[in-house]
Each structure stands twice: as structure tokens, then as C-alpha cells.
Amino acid sequence: MAGISTLGQYLRQISELKTQQISFSDLSQQLSSGKKTQSLSGLGNDIVRSMRSRVGVDSLETYNSNITNANRRINLMINATKEVKSQTENILSGLRLAVQEGDFPDLQSTQKLAESVYSFVIDLINQTDGERYLFGGSDTSEPPLTDKGLLKSALGNFLPDSSDLTNPPLVASGMIGDWGDGTITTDQFIAAYESTSDTVLGFSNALTSGTAGKTKVQVSDISNFDYTQLANEGPLKDIIRTLGVLKQLPPVEYAPGALNDPTATTLAQDVAPFPPREKQDNFYKVINNLIAKLDTSLDKIDQMQFDLSQVQAQISIVKTSHTDQIKAYQDIIGEVEDADISEVSVKIKQMEIQIQASYQVTALVSQLTLSNFLGR
Image 1 (cartoon, helix red, strand yellow):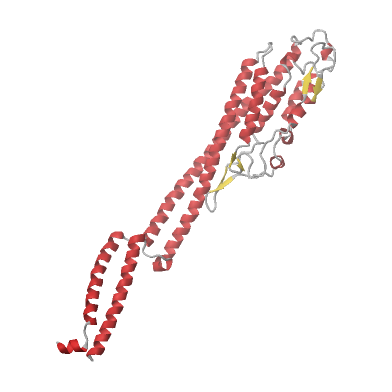
Image 2 (cartoon, helix red, strand yellow):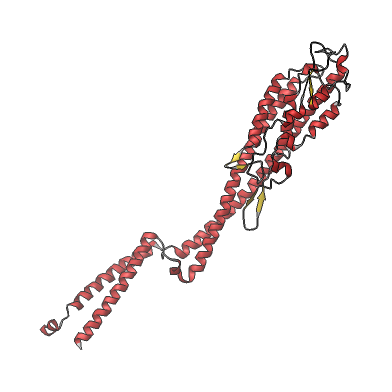
């Protein structure tokens, strides 16, 4: 009976020792990882709270990433429009300084500046964030604007024979040629270049066909913000067209568009640089129209920047809210999954004592043989 009893005690002691070792291993794992368990199933009834919180964190972090990307793109768009505005202001200032009613302004330097600014503005309109064109809507397959030379060709040129104005003009092509030789009136010339199509200006097929789509940022399951600014809508288009006309105008001393009479250049008094007053008035009417267009475009750029800043402010508020909610979810996850390191340390110390005692008891039990028992 003693042997059977001793064997049972011995086996029970080994079983308890294994249980203590498992518990000690679990506590050691908690101490090293900071987590109560290494599997979701180990959370028991709290598994649902943990999973819901983790899904919430993942979803909100995705939306915050969307907002971060949109915020970066909006910053790039605002900076691009600021550059466009700055360069346009330089052109406008040059025109205003150069143009004096009744005198012949030196427009050559202003036109050279307009030509370089024209190319620079195209580069800004075609600015990208990665592979995404900022002013091309949702279309990413082609740049919003390309100088294909169609505007230059449509505007044409006017160049009279300065050695003998009784001769036909050396060059008279396109809208400017018609205006210069009096085929169309100044008002008709202005109306013609103001109605230039998007295709002639060089805008992409997606923009001209209206299929470019919107640029939106998804900030929640049910909310998104539209920050679309298309290159062929509003001030950017007006500036491109105005600069295109300005840099193409013929030398001012010929004052084209004069008398709305194809034979105007045969008049004896029509000798550069002293054309009739009517020619001067017509020429300055075009210049003043271009100045007004640039003025209006600058106001519209301010509105564009304001609209972009408004969206930026709104999505920043949403991001702050998401960040706060993420912290709340993380607190729940921590409450459910994180182990109390101080408590675990105390338990490990207690477990060490228990295991040491169990080993001692097991050692004693293992020494209880019949001969030892009888010898005592």
C-alpha cells in the first residue's frame, strides 16, 4: 500500500510540476513580449473587443494615409499656383509700365519675358506627384497641357513691308494677320482669341472631352472631399491664352488692326512709327484687354488657393479626429492584450518559489523506496 501510495504521490507531484513549468513559461513570455498571450484565442471573451479595435485602427490609418497624400498634393498645387501668380504679376507689371497711351511702348522685353513665362507656366500646370498630374483630374495617362504649336499657328503673324507700306504685307496669317490688314475688326480679333478652343490651346484629350474626372480624397466610410482644379478651367487657362497672344503680337511700331480696311496700309500718312490715331487706339485696346484678362486671372488664382486651403483645413480636422480615435482603439487593445509587467514580475517570483518547493518535494518523494522506508 505504501508503494502504491508513494507512486501516486510521485506522479501527482510530477503533474503539478509540469503545470507550474507551463505557467512559468507563460509568465516569462508575457514578461518578454508585454502581451498576455501570443494568440487571439488566448484572449477568451475579450477577443471580439480586440478584433474590432484592430479593424478600427487599420481602417482609420488607411484614411489618415489618404489624407496625408491629399495634403501633400494640395500643398504642391498651392505652391504651383503661387509661382504662376508671381510670374503673371511680373508680366502684368511690365505691361503697365510699358504701355503709355499715345506713345509706343517697348514691348519687346515684355514679350520675351512672356515667352519664357509661358513655358514655365506649362511646366507648373504639368507638375506631378509621383505619376499623378496635379491639374489633370483623375487622369494620369497624359500631361494636362502640351504646347503643340496650334495656338501659335492659329494666331498667325502680321509683318508689313516697312520699306514701302504701299506694298501688301510681307506676312499676314491667322487671326493676327486678319486683324493687321484690317480684314477683321479689333473687337472681332479679341473675340476670336478669347474663344480659342481647348484643343488649340494644347490641353489633353481627357480635359477637352470632359472625361478627366475629379480628384477626391476618401476620409471615412461615407465622406470624401473634392479638391479638383483642372488646368483648362479658370485662371490657368486664361493665363496660358493671354500669354500666348501677348508673345505673338507683331512689333508695336506697326500698330496692326488699324482701320478695319484691307487697303489701310496704302495711305501715305500711314508710315511707321507714326500710324494714325485709330490704329494706336485699336492696338492699345488689345493690350488693355490682355491686361484686364491677367488682372482677372490673378483674382481667380486667389480664389483657387482659398478653395484648396479650405479643403486642406477640413481634411486636417478629420485627420486629427481619426488620430484621437486611433488612440482610443489602441487603449482598448492595450487593456485587452497588454500584460501588467509589474504584476507578471511578482507572479514569476512567486512561481520560482513554488517550483523550487515542488522540486524539493519531488526529490524527497523519489527517494522513498521500500528499503529506505523499512530502514527508518
